Amino acid sequence: MFYRKIKIINTSGVLSVKRLTCCLQKIAILMILSTSASIADTRDMHADEQQATVTYTDAMLVIKELHSKLLYIMQNAESLGYQGRYGEVEEVVISRFDTPLIAKVIMSRYWRQLDDEKKMDFIRLFQRLSVATYASRFDGYDNESFVELSAEKLKKGRLLIKTELQRTDDKPVHLDYLMHETDGEWKIISVIANGVNDLSLKRAEYATVIKDRGFDGLVDEVSRKISDMELQDKE
Amino acid sequence: MNKITRTVLTFLMLGLFAGCASNQSKNATPHDPIEPANRTFYNFSEGLDRHLIKPLAEGYVSITPAPVRTAVTHFFDNLSYLNVILNSFLQGKISQGFSDTGRFIVNSTLGLGGLFDVATDAGLERHQEDLGQTFAVWGIDRGSYVYLPVRGPNTVRNLPDFATSLFLNPLFYVTGAVLFPVTALNVVNIRANLLDATNIRDEAAVDPYSFTREAYLQQREYLIHDGNPPTEGYDDIFDEDGDFGGDDDVLVIE
Image 1 (tube, one colour):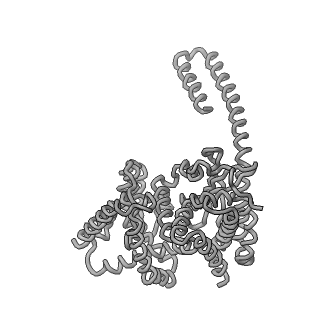
Image 2: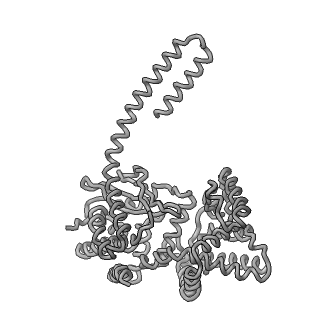
Image 3: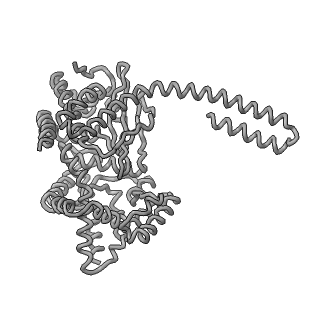
């Protein structure tokens, strides 16, 4: 908007230079007009930007909080050990991910068939899985850094925060976070790593396991994954 | 000729499976209508991998220094790069096509036959293009998901790329005894580069078959859109049943 306006004014400015070289006055007026227009527009733009930043900042802070925790467990991976890393990320994962919604979306049509107790158990199990995954995957540091790049508005007030995990010898990993606001707080509802969305992966997998072995079979399988990650680190 | 026969046979085989697809589609995910056949191939490949290819790749990693493996990867990447050049142009990415051509020439000469990737440092970035991506850009549908023995996850749209990538690879025109060890090295090196990914899969997946399929299909979308897939697809999953995302019956955990 801002650029387009300036361009139009500039073009007409050039034209008037060609046609009426003598009429410096007109040019001066045009210049003044264009400057004031741009000042007004700049002010508008700043206002827009500020408003956008206010909404995005809260969401961005959540991501920054998660990233700084991850960086901390990476840098202190060995002294912390698996249990230490688990303890460090547990709180941020539980408070910043909307696990109840994530669990519901992942379980898709099976969710409705579960009673409240089973739903609660599954949500807790899934939280343990997420924490364990971070604790086991972020187990070393090789000068990586997280960079938060941009925020993009999606449908229904959801936000997509784009970030990168930059590495020294390799291309950066694109980490995108899908977030939504619930009870005035921004929560992560999906993580997309280099275009691969963890949520749809798990949804397809869990549907297969439920179909073959039922809900209890899925719970067994997920619990086994969590204890495998614990054991693996003790080796 | 032998190779061409094999390629033709592969296509014939695939045609047959695609034909079976319509009869087996009940109970399956829409994009994986031949899941039973795919799973059979998947299990076969996994068995072969677990008992032969993966141990070889792990052995190769343990005895070969990392810079050597990097050089090997660069060498084979460079040989397969003519297919990238072709597809950059076919997708209308003209300047990328010229940059890719420059990359191939620079790495083949200054990079000593592709062993060193000097082009990246010179600003000629590596791109990932293939005929499957070109067809996607042209608007051709993805078709069914197919899991092929040895070749792994694919979609029908991707199959013609086997031909172009084969015929455009200089190795295809090499004959004689050297071909076997070179091909074996290529396979083992490719597998070695995938070790991290498959270890993550084995650690995370509760159903490795569906994990591989979903990850592959999403990764392809990502490549087709050169790392910027349309974001509107990301949150559709939350709107599907109409009530996802609502607070009506979301449980609050104390």
